Structure formats: C-alpha cells, structure tokens
Amino acid sequence: MRCYMMALFSQRIRMDAACFARGALRACLCLALLVSAGCGPSASHGVTLTVLGFNPDSGQALRTDALDEFTRTTGIAVDLIPTGGTSAEQLSQTLRLLNQHASTPDVYLIDVVWPGTLGEHLLDLTRYADQEAHSHIPALLANDTVKGRLVGLPFYVNIGMLYYRTDLLAKYGFAHPPATWDELESMARKIQRGERAAGNRAFWGYVWQGAAYEGLTCNALEWQASFGGGRIIEPDGTVSVNNPHTIRALRMAVRWLGAISPPSVLSYTESDSLNAFRAGNAAFLRYWSAGVDAGSGGALLPAGPHGRAQTMGGFHLAVSRYSVNPRESARLVMYLTGRTVQSRRALTRGRLPTIPQLYQDPALARTFPYAAALETAGAAAWVARPSTIAQSHYAAVSQAYYHTVHQVLSNETSAPEALAALERKLVELTGLHPGAPPE
Ligand code: GLC
Image (cartoon, rainbow, N blue to C red):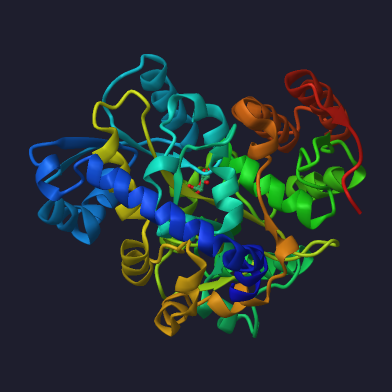
C-alpha cells in the first residue's frame, strides 16, 4: 500500500518545496478571506445542513465518528437523508435533485466516478480549500477537478480484494490464497466439491458482483486488465475495449458460471455476494477493501497473464451549487475529509484514507490485515475506471460496458461480436477513436 501510495505521492512531494512559498501566501489570503467572511463558530449557529448519500447504518456511524463533534464545535447541525440502492440508483437520485436546482441537500456523498457527470452542479471548493485539502492523493484530487474547478474532496478509497475462508483453505490443504485466476478456479472447484459432498448443497466456490450495474464494470475491468485488455478507454482517449485479451478474460468468467459461481451471481450486487459468503455458502468472495468481517482472509485479487488488477473505488464529498449554506457546507466537507476524521474512521471502520501521510501510522497497518499484500502491489495493479477521460459520458460508457459484459456472461452473444459492437457504441458516445490497449 505504502509503495503504491508513495509512487502516487512522490509527484506531490516534489511539488511541495516549490509550492511552499505560494502556499504560505495562499494561507494568508485564505485567512483574510475567512475572517472577512465571518468564519467564527457563532456566525454559523442555527444553520442545519442536509447530507445525502449515507445508508442508515453508515450514517449512524458517521454521527458517532464525526458529526456530533462537528455540531458541538461549530454550532452547525447536520441532518442525514437516509439513502439506499446501488451506485447507479443513487446517481439518478442525485442527478434528479441537482437538475431541479434543489437547495437541499447541501452536501452529497458521491462515487469517485461521478465528478465528471455532476461537475457543473457542484460548488467549486477552491476558495474554501485549506492546506489539508491539498494533501490528498494527487490522482484523486485530479479526479475531482472538472474544467479547472475542485468539485469534491476524497473521503475514502475502496479497492477490489479477494476474501477467503481461512478455515476451508486449511481444511483442503491450501497454505496460501490463490495467486492466479487459474489457481482460484482449481481451488474453488476442490473446496466446492468437498463441501457439497459434506452436505452443503448450496455451496459455491466463488461469488462476486455480476448484476448489470456499476459493480459489474468494476469486476469485469479487473478481469480484462489482468489479461492485458486495458481499461475500456485509456487515459489518452483510445477506446481500447475490443481486443483479444478482453475476449479471453470474459471467456474465463463465462466458464465460472455454473461451475464455481452460481448462475444467480448474474443478479448479485455487493450485498448479495457478501450475504452468500457470510452465510457460509462460498469459499471466495470478491469485495471491497472495507466491509468484510475480520476473521476471513483478505488478499490481492489473483493475477491474470498480465499481472494483478484491482479496481479503485471509493467515495468523495461535494457541495451543491444550489445550497444556500455554501460556506458551512464547505466547512463540513473539509472537516469530514480531513486528517482527524479519516484517521479515526480508518482505525475504527476500516475505511482506507485518501491522505498518504496517514499510511505511516503503524496502528493503521495493524488495522488492515491485508495491508502487507497491498504494499507489494505495483502501481499498474491499481486500475481506475475511465471516468476522467469520459467526463460527463462516463455513466453512459459504464452502462454500455456492463450491459455488454452481462450479455456475454448470459450467453446471449459471443464476446468478439459483443465487444465489436461496444467499441462502435463507445466511439459514437464519446467521439474518441478506437485502438489497441497499451502493451
Ligand atoms: C463501491 C465503490 C464504488 C463503486 C461501487 C460499485 O461502492 O466504492 O466506487 O462504484 O462499489 O458498485
């Protein structure tokens, strides 16, 4: 983890010296701005902010972790509007509100892939950003910068991981989690056969997120990137999805269906796959870096012929441009995304921080049982969805991709035919050019 983080941050470190003088000047200007804006706690007393995006459980956790303290110290109350559903459902709810120029909610929890889609409706946080707001992973700050405006700040990172039943690995004589997809397949087959013979007819080797939604984009991107199939659209704007490596990767997943993964995995979102694993009905689970109980093993996803690949997900916080409390809202976002809250939530909730320096805390390494594995992953293993390059087209790009993958997995169409059609569609949607993924 630190290796990768360090690579990502080194650019920042090099910039730091040069930025110091500018930073000091900016800090003075900010201070002057804040003083003139009447930033003292009393100025905000009586304001109630509303936040959309947390489900009831995570909202309750946030209250204990941070919101109670925020209200105590600032006098600003915070109402949480309970939110549910998949990332796509939340996106359409958010878009509906913003398209209506609704003045509430003030603050939105947004998926890392949404800034390009929502950017024009979000407040530019640049004038409110303090020194700490600039200390996030530079790639994530770049992700949140749309047409030169800082439209969000990173709250936590999610990374695709493989979870496994340590008891079953031991029972079937496996000393390590699988290092490659082939190994995963053969281990899953063996454990599944044994557990079914022992009486659990509902047992499967491997569960993941196969419903036609954003989660499938994340899963399939991991397969194809680990086969050398690229990132759907490359950062340089090449629409690269139609290639033999991606075809091979999809064929691998087709082979899993009914063999080591239940056919119903094609309707699984995160919660379905987690439930199957927690109920004791699966040996392996693909899930995100936060959220699986301690006790199960966590490892990097297996490697394909091209190496390992794990999708980077996560959530950010943004302020609506239509909020009547922009200053208070920005203050809440700064506080929640800042070091104190991120560090607290890393240790107590397993949320991976977006501020590199926090990874130097030994307590954090102890909290993440798989931190050592993450440390050894090269930067190439961390795959971002093409949301920055696709900008406001990302939702449509991802939808076209996951529908295509879903059709291939459902045997409605062959991978070569489906990918050729997808390439045409993505070119039409984005105006970009087709080409091969990088070697
Ligand atoms: C996780 C990720 C998010 C992703 C979603 C897909 O919540 O953090 O980035 O879009 O899963 O289901």
